[in-house]
Image (cartoon, rainbow over all chains, first blue to last red; front, side, top):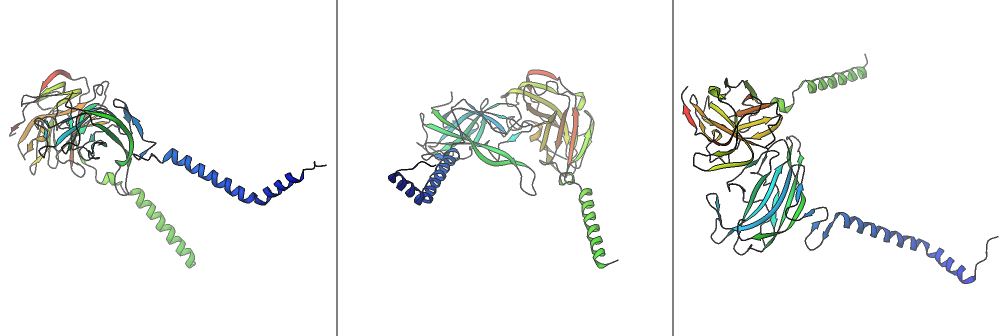
Length: 210
Length: 192
């Protein structure tokens, strides 16, 4: 024989049975909301302030980032007005911001810098978030147009910026964009389809070359 | 034979023909492939608009870690600079050596033309019938030549040598004579 229950408890069970569909719906909605939050936390733009996706590696200067194509280590940055014999500002008062990085091609073929400056961008202090205006070989300060395979190059990636945009002490954020081997119908394979691979920060700007 | 059977046979024949044409057609890459002109070191190779001798006058491939340019400056590398002497001319119209690659065991390297002050052969103008003599310089990782078994030079007067002549020369295998500092010789012109 089933145990008897008191009158008040029976009423509570009856109420629960009456409202059960509502409770199930509420619990279901809560579970879905929690799942959505979890997915958003794992993949979505997490830092609302700077819109940096969580899957972008955050590195300190000196730490290496490797993609399928390149190994890139951002070291430091400095501001100057001229690289004698190679490069000078186009507008009086402007400055040149140079980011020093070691870049090695991991492929068995060269990478040409003319079309895409190794996907290295800078931001911070109002600097342009785009390809560098010039890439110089740090050893000689001369222009360099292609990187040969499996040879680490110390490069200076140079952007021209307006007066007072970047000074000694400014902290840059350097974005490293990865290229992936891709192809369009009717074309041969090429390296493109950029994804944001890593963010190096803070990269302090010095007053001149070290 | 019923009309339905004739239709089926026609469709089958068309499908078989399509399959055969597809199998017999060359790939796009083959259709536009370069016209390769192979030569040995010291031997003249002649293509549509290129006539070249790689390692002329018994000259040798050399390596260096630093290169002195004619303007008095130097170019250094953390790897190795490979110096390949070449004698080359255009054939039908003025040109320049727009394509120069060194393939070491399948790893491709383009000529160093951007840090040499335009003093190497890839920046020289080539005239029909007049040999231009100079060096093509490559930069490789320090260990690239270690144990290398196949070293090939490819040169052409078009940046993209597809559908044009491509001179390929198999170079002697390393080791090569090494100088800590080598000179980039000035480009000279000779009437053969």
